[in-house]
Length: 451
Ligand SMILES: Cc1cc2nc3c(=O)[nH]c(=O)nc-3n(C[C@H](O)[C@H](O)[C@H](O)COP(=O)(O)OP(=O)(O)OC[C@H]3O[C@@H](n4cnc5c(N)ncnc54)[C@H](O)[C@@H]3O)c2cc1C
Image (cartoon, rainbow, N blue to C red; front, side):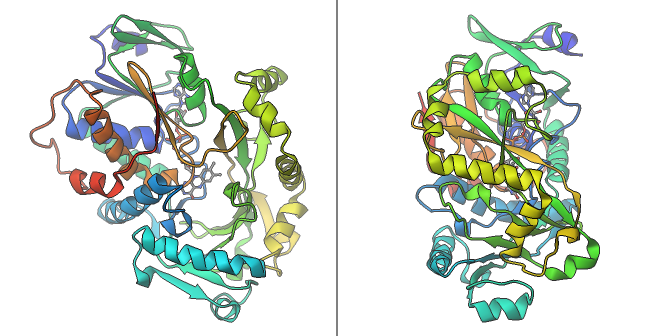
């Protein structure tokens, strides 16, 4: 298949990665521009990795700093209405379970109040948010202990793989070609084209422009082209435990807690109400050796060693001097090895939860977190410009929520940066589910673009 495709004329744009971001991007590119557009994906279908292995929540942006996390906040806000109408139109799961973000310490009450204002600043309506006292939380969720909470009334549980598959079908209708089972091993520059080599051998795929949406592998792919050398990535596995159905009554809404370490907000496990009604506890954030290490620490010792020695090393060495990080990493490992530790963390806000209520492990997903030379965790997505390529990395939570809006805005930006040497479509091929212009203007602002 790959050989046949490679012998054709070069693709105008090739996207690496058939996750929710690459798939959304391919849809918008083909919707807006004429040209030969391909998505290459190492697996046999879309949304196999992070876009499937996540909490499944459409996050409303009340907890996102409107300044430091502006792009994620705007994309999430714009995408909420998009997903809502899309789910309705396509008959996809949409479970508006809502979320309580609870203060587990008295000191967190101030934070919860701040979230209320952030939510409004990020465009949420007053009717979507409510501050609750501890007593009000108890009335609505009698088994939840807190010092108060913010109630986000439009947080919704969904199934991101089914969204991604529907978007793939839309993209294909617009002419996008998905090439599965092609794992990018190396990328070479040949005059004004890029040649993408597959791990399985065979002919290279040639492209006039490349967009890297390879999720956990995106930094490695940028490094293949000598880009983003100042960054390193670390992988954290988020594990979940399923709660037996007979204990589902413990809470009927998602229960999140105010982050104990705001600079590492992905560390605290939650009580989750999945779109299919299952209840789960998770995720924790266990440091692991690779983006696809779904069990154990590494797939083989060579992979672990490679990861540790992978350049740049300075970023990781800087982090080894961070005592807080090392303590936290140890705690996260404890919650991976001992189910009792995971239960204990959930008991802080649902004291009645017992160890044996956690009946089986749920799906695990791995986050690739980028650190800079000082060992600092970068909060926003990072976009890296190359001569014939553009790379999106650190596209972490709430990335699934924001993807259709962020992708539209990215297409607009690639066009205005002069990267898309293609003719703009004068009319759409098929009826678009969303309005491109209003979405791009809702997101418009610039994240870090590195020359
Ligand atoms: C534990 C956890 C919970 C989360 N919960 C939520 C949530 O509730 N709500 C939310 O909005 N966000 C959540 N997120 C974040 C969200 O899941 C991600 O932001 C989003 O899925 C990223 O999508 P992506 O397309 O960039 O990456 P991916 O889905 O990982 O897609 C990248 C694709 O690239 C392919 N690829 C990689 N390397 C190669 C290669 N060499 N050759 C070819 N193909 C390649 C991979 O196979 C993969 O399919 C969560 C993340 C984690 C880890």
